[in-house]
Every structure is written in structure tokens, then in C-alpha cells.
Image 1 (cartoon, one colour):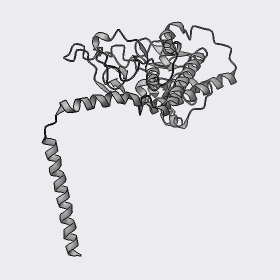
Image 2 (cartoon, one colour; image 1 turned 180 degrees about the vertical axis):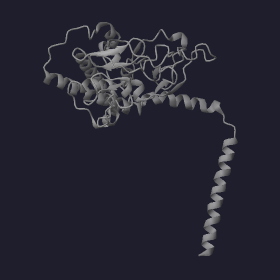
Image 3 (cartoon, one colour; image 1 turned 90 degrees about the horizontal axis):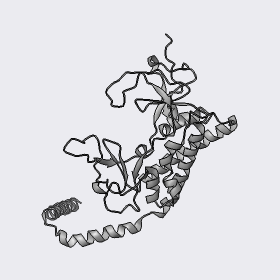
Image 4 (tube, helix red, strand yellow; image 1 turned 45 degrees about the horizontal axis):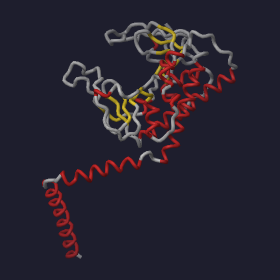
Length: 328
């Protein structure tokens, strides 16, 4: 038995040493890229035949439908529920009057601890528009800086669904460009909607919002998307475009080049977190209770105020069972 053990040990050592020597020899050997170039180009050319993936086409089509339901539902709810947006920062509040917390930092990030100045909000304050360059397929050539005006911009979610194989009509693909100019929310009189119908619209919108984010998460596992680390620019495709539009390094050596990273669902479908008023909170949120109040995504808060049932995963963020601020 001892001799068998020694033989097995020597065999294993020889195999490991031989593998290490072979790896070292292969790593130091010179690669003939001229012979590999045709093989690489052929593989890249044939890769486009694998897309779009047939199993992901229903997911992309469901995302398109859910997005339409979300936009339609939020548009109808904004005619009933008042929304306030700050003049100088992206802060949004769902309610008739804005809160009194001093969290405004200005449009140039040069001030802090200032009260907000509220104006009536609109659809883009709840559903933040995220645009991306529109390409016919995900294997087109990179967009150069001089070509940035040759490509139209469409919603990033629809561009992702287009790459995934969804058939999107032009009236849906380019409709978002006219939403912010045609929709006026708080300036209109509230529509005569029954409470039960309003609750149904809110629940349907909330469910579509969850379906939208879940579908985008699934698509991002298959189809690559990029986001700039510094300016939140989004590009749907293998690698980011070369348009020098990043304002962070405008006067630096980068000359406006984006620094791309892998995009997530929050980059394509921003949640727009707002303050949440609980039943035991004061009617107007004050600055002294900032540590006690909860938060919620703007769409969730909007739907909840008309009677929709909020999923349990948001209760921790909303501090549903949290303490009320002390009375002074």
C-alpha cells in the first residue's frame, strides 16, 4: 500500500509540474495574430446570427406593454394627485403642498441646507426620461463623435427591447419626445374618476411598474448595456459610443469622453426616490423629523395614495412601523 501511495504521489506531481511548464511555455510563446485575425472576424460575423435570442422576445414584448401601461396610468393619476417639483433641484414631493425639509442643493450643487421652492410637477418628474442612440442592431459600428447627429435618440428601455427582438411601432418609439410638451398635469381640473376606478388604475400601474423593472433586469442579463460613471449617459450595445458629450471632463485631458461601466436596471428605469408620509406623521413634513420619515419610489408613492397595495419589499424603505418624530 505504501508503494502504491508513493507512485500515486509521484504521478500527481509530474502531472502538475508538466501542466505548469506547458502553461508557462504557451504564455511566453509568440502568437501569430495574422493567422488568428480571419478566425476572430469570422466569429464576430457569425455571432450576429445568434441574436436576437428567441426565448427573450416575449420578455421584450412584455416590457414594451408594461411601459405603455405605466405611462398611461401615471398620466391619468397626475390629473387627480398633485405633484410638486423643486425649481432648483430634482427633488419631487407627492402631495398638495411640498415638504419643509432643507435638502435643496441648487442646480449647480453650490448650496446646501436650503428650503425648496415648489412648482407643479409633470410626467417627467415621476418617470425620468433616459435616452439612448437608436441603432438598427447591436452589432453596428461604433458611433463616432462626428456621427452623433446622424442617429436619433429614443428611450433606452425601448432601444433595449428593439435589440431583444421586439417589434416596436414608430408611434411608440418616438412618442416620448412629445410627452413633456403636450402633457400638463396640475394645471388641469381633476378628472371625475370614481374611487374604485382610481384604485384599479393605481394597482394596475404599480403591477406594470414591477413587471417593467423585472423584465429590464432579465434583458440586461443577456443584452449588454453601458452607463457613464460620471454623467449617467446610457448606451445600448457591446461598447459605448465615442461621442464626447461628458460634461465632467469637458476641460480636462479626456475631452468629454465617457467612462463606460455596466448598466443596471436603475440606470435605465430610475426609481426617483421621494419622501413618504405615514399616517402618524404630521400633515406637512418638517426638517426636524428627517431621520424618522421614510422613502418610496415616486411611482409607488403615487399609486399608494390612490389605494394601491404596496409590495412588502418597500415597507422597510417606507419605515411603515417606524417611530413618529418627537413633538416640539
